[in-house]
Length: 396
Image (tube, rainbow, N blue to C red; front, side, top):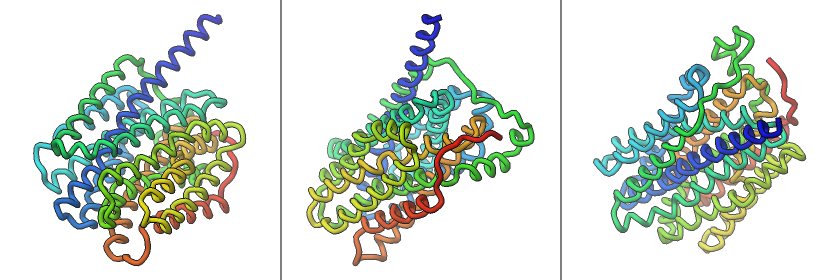
């Protein structure tokens, strides 16, 4: 009996770490792609609004595939969806150097959004559905940490454009296919079936029930989406206009991700002990404060890097904290729907970031871009403080 339990534990660990590697490489590609294209477009004289609009392709792709991804996942299981998503991502990355065109790159970013969403949705649902309650926060934190490490490393490869503009795209596609191949070592699994047929066959009803219980837990994902897209696609534009060096921009963006990496697992484990809501509130408030401080000291690039690092320590875990908080509030058989809703909120936030940020850069010159980021975080904090509640998982 003990041998069987030990074998099961080993298999679960193997599955977790393979999923972690896949997500880390995906994080690397995303972390590199957004600032890379923003810098290329800025150096080519593309306007900030068009630059920001182009960055939305990734998140439009995510939204386009969202209504159609849950049923295939329930029917075919996690593994086939990860394989299809990963194949779309590495093929799209490989195509970037073939034609430098704003519309073509927008289409490729849209395809990467479709592939990335398929990959992330499958992996995060697999982890939330199979993790024991006492390790849920920690496992999701490891998932978030793996993405954060990849995302932190990604911007550091932007200066490789000095060797060749195509080189970063080719490198990331090679890393993606290496990680993707690991999925073949996993046995396929499927989500827990929904017992109520009226709910199982009605997408709108699944969404309505899930949002009824867990809409507040989707707000951290919305906020993180705004942060990720606006900081990585538009902060480089803002920084270059304020005479920051390209290498310093990469360092500042990496500082934010590194801050999140350091606190990811501690915050997830702490949420297991004292409740996710308290950690989410603290993260929103701390991030808002430090981005606000960053807007005051932005004439000193090293102080901006420090403020990004501190902000990352607080809010670099918002997405994983939101997922684990959602898992507390959502009926178990609706966890795939809950994960999907978090992803949709993340995509809405990610779309809002480049659009709102691009307009802000174009028309607001008196106030810092980081002040906008701070105000968004503080607004989400106030809403979560007023309407949030502690987790107590119901049933359908």
